[in-house]
Every structure is written in structure tokens, then in C-alpha cells.
Length: 148
Length: 105
Image (cartoon, rainbow over all chains, first blue to last red; front, side):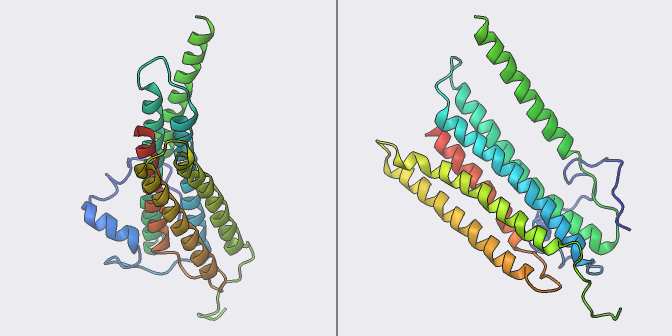
């Protein structure tokens, strides 16, 4: 019943179903109170879902801590406001990770109740690409400084 | 097995979830310390103090939510998480907002 969907066609919430934003928000706060509540899943599955959510929250917190550390400890960089741009970028990414985490948690909870396949997500790949691109840019910056 | 007997927790999923909440709380503490730090710099104004106070308040909220959730996990079967989860995520997003304000000031 709860097979992991391997073929991901959905980005964030868009193509799984086209609920309005308000209903998505209601579902965040009460995934069980939706019109078709289905059956209560095995609590071990729900707890696994919760741990996945917490792991994403820690990922988001780490990004937020990185952004705050950039803002507070980095010296002013040669490019104007680059430090602030890096910090804000990391903070926005961290906030997005946290909000995506709760959205994915509620959709997974709902899918488990209804006995459907778990929602697919491209978010991990996008986050990996963003973090990789950021690291590559920093490597280039460090190398440029070293050879100047 | 009868209908109402709770499934035994051989995989210690409740304990692992409890520890996951603890780990997350520790991460949140690190973020909270970083958010409060600017208030102790020389020359910090009332705006910075307010931001730091807001960061402390959100940190207290995160700790309280985790405490409440861990208590809910103690029973068998554990109580479902429900509202604590979205509130926790939104508070984390508030941390990001506070960090952004600190960065811009």
C-alpha cells in the first residue's frame, strides 16, 4: 500500500493535486480532518514520517545557522553586499526547507491514511543542486583570491 | 491480535522519535544563540534587543513544543503529532526571518 513512488512528476505541491493554498494550510494543521480521512495508519509509520520531518527541520536549521554565521562572522567582501547576499540566500533556503518539510509531512500523512502511494518530490534533488552550485561558486572565489 | 490492542513497539520508534526531537532542539539552540549574539555586541540598539528577544521567545516555543511532544510519545500507542509539527516548522521559518533582519541591519 505505502510503496515509495519512484517516478517523480510533482514539484512541491503542484501536480499531485491542485488544492487551493488555503486547503493546503488547513491540511498542514490537521491532516486527519480532511474530507476523506481514511484509516489511522500504523503509528510506527506516522512516527517515521515525523522523524523524516524533523530531519528536514534540522537541515533547514543548519542552513539558517549558516546564513546567520555568514552575516555575523564574515568580513566585508570585495564585491559590494556579497556577504549579505550569501547570508540571505542561505536563510531563504533554510526557511523554504522548513515550509516544504511540513507540506511533505502532511501530504505523506494523508497518503498513508488513504492507502495511496507516498507523494513524490523533486525537492531533495533541487536542494542538492543549489547547495552544490553554491559550493562550486565559493571554490572559484577562493581560487581566484589565491591566484591574484 | 484483538482490534484494540496496540502494536508492540519492537523497533523503538517512539524512542527514536524522542531522540530526533532532542537533536532538533539542540540544533535550534545553536541557531538561537547565533540569533541572540548581536544583542551583546557593543553599540547594539533597541531594535537589535527586540530582535534578540523575539529569537529567545521562538526558541522557548520550540523547546516547549518538543517537551509537549515527547510527553505525548510516552504512551502506547503514542499520541499523533498533528499541530505541533506545523507550528514547529513555522517557528523555524521565523528563525530564518529574524536571521535575515539581523543580516540586513
